[in-house]
Image (cartoon, rainbow, N blue to C red):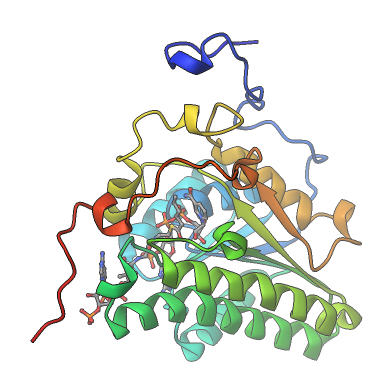
Length: 304
Ligand code: HXC
Ligand code: NAP
């Protein structure tokens, strides 16, 4: 057991143990053999890690996102694992593009058996500074895009009478609110809620719908806005009850379990993978600092 050191108050404490190395699996080899998994935003960060775990477990992978450089990076990562993969340009705000991406997926691998709605949009901004278009953009990608992908997947499975599994990636500020991220927090609350509605509506058709909530999982693909926000916290491990942040394979393992045959009776559930960080609240939190101040912004003034 490695003891944490150099963090003052946490010196000598052990925190939650580190997980097995990347490449290990709790599922039998080939669990997803013959299954195609459609992952939005799988060219970067957590989506790429989730897609990689499905690929290791035998799946063929469909990556859908907007930017060619992300599509290329995702495809290369899956090819390096020796798994079949296609990458399809798709903006999940557009239902027609989603239908086109599913057509391409079906033509290559057959109807995807698993949909992971991982793509999302986010940036820190004080609510009073946010433009109407900024709000719309985040809600449109994170909430509306997730619904439209679910709808496409659901329609195709209901029409063919085949079972399927949906995993919607959420965030814990769906429950707590997310000061500085009011658009994303509201959208993720919607994602949690639509997961619960769809799980009931589509259970009779054999479609599971669950949500997966990552805690803090820093990675090299984080947007400059998110990274800049995170950089304001110097020792991120010491801020977690686990005394460490998440490792990407831990999220991938949770996703592959939820979509596996071993989780067939789990639906409408939200699985939080965050070392209990979101429950870390008390009546004596640190002193209040406004979001403006945290972001180094001056006093708010109405434009005249
Ligand atoms: C204020 C901003 C802004 C910012 C954009 N806008 N960035 N407002 N602060 N930092 C405003 C723009 O001015 C514009 O409004 C509107 O938002 C749309 O911006 P566009 O650049 O035209 O949008 P688009 O090209 O569609 O790009 C979407 C995006 C971009 C969300 C702005 O960042 C993106 O593509 N993000 C995808 C990846 C991502 O967001 N990942 C984060 C997921 S992490 P106006 O009024 O000027 O027209 C996550 C949880 C992390 O969700 C938790 C970590 C702890
Ligand atoms: P990320 O690297 O920024 O990934 C976001 C992905 O979404 C990108 O690959 C992007 O690809 C795609 N995307 C954005 N807008 C899109 C659109 N309109 N159409 C299609 N794809 C779009 O972020 P991440 O950290 O991996 O986050 C992944 C998920 O985890 C998100 O749902 C996020 O909210 C959640 N999450 C992350 C953390 C964390 O600590 N990292 C914590 C809580 C929740 P393109 O740019 O190519 O379109």
